[in-house]
Length: 312
Image 1 (cartoon, rainbow, N blue to C red):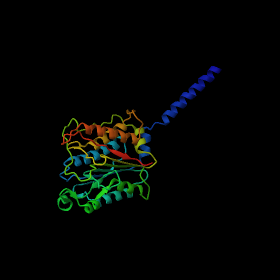
Image 2 (cartoon, rainbow, N blue to C red):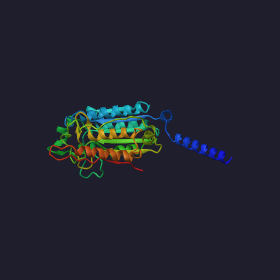
Image 3 (cartoon, helix red, strand yellow):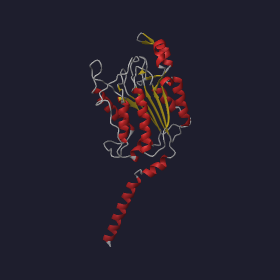
């Protein structure tokens, strides 16, 4: 009798542990049911017409759009609602309108991604570490902006946008902040606009591998489906640094961000807990390491220190 009781208790415990373990897993079907009401708004701004940038901004624009589409397709979610601003349309007014339009539609169940690739800069008295985004047409540089090597401050201030301003637009949204907001920029952070964005054509060092062996639904849920609103700001360079790029592969930072994101969404990845802090830290490490393998035109190894902020 005692042996039967022991067997019953053992079976009960095993079944209980198994059911609890299975209930903690996020299956593909359960995940899809939960995510049916989620929409992904993707706003991409890329200065593709500025000849001093070259082709990298266009490559970044294409990669971000295609990779996010691929990503959400892998997880059987809807196609991202994508807005791209490029060429002559890269103007502050158009970007602000696009941000306002997207945010007016975003609900607390949705995801909002803002991405910028182009020229970035700062004023000496800027208090934020994040750069300003250059948002005026390439053909206005010579006549309206440049005076030798100095910037006409008023024009530039009126025609640029900081990542903090994008953050504030999201934070102050009246009808509810999206469950996840990503604000990402791949640009310089120097006191003056660079006359060119450094390009390095070593193909062996110019690409970060992007792969996703097996879709990790639990990993995706931890990163993208948290009910508590989260705003992640991340940029390629710290103060006084230049963002390197590859003419065929795009910005080094963008490549490493995407490859790290795909890595963290792979169910086989178990090296570190799945969260945005760890993902951002790995992106920083990989971007910085890759940049150091390249020698800039002055014969110095490249240095970038991407950084991020995630308010509580």
